[in-house]
Each structure stands twice: as structure tokens, then as C-alpha cells.
Image (cartoon, rainbow, N blue to C red; front, side, top):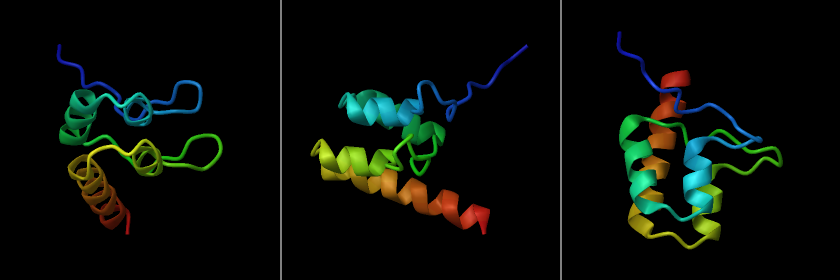
Length: 78
């Protein structure tokens, strides 16, 4: 049996992509982005992982990939 991990599961109000952005784990962020984790899910105070990535001054390439994924996810919802 194959199982698919829940990429957007919250733990203490944050998703895995949020944790990776906050802790500046670039390789983990890249894996989560490639797997389709949703960067637009906010934490308990309303910030999303893109905002955290910008706050932590992560590389622009990572931020751009997160924004692109965020936009694709939003288009699918409409």
C-alpha cells in the first residue's frame, strides 16, 4: 500500500512549508514546493509562508517559486 504524505497538515498552527521557511531550510522548501505544498495557508496570526520567506530574506528564486505555486493553487480554487 502506498500512502501520500499530507503536505498541508498543521502542527502548532503551521504547515511543513511554513516551518521550512521559518527555519530557512532551503532544500526542504524546494522539496515541499516540488511536491505541491500550499504556501498560502496562513499561520495562527495570518502570515503565510511566502511572508515568512521574505521576512527571513530567503533567496529570491525560492520566494518566486513559492509565489508561483501559490498563484497556481489560487487559480485551481476559482
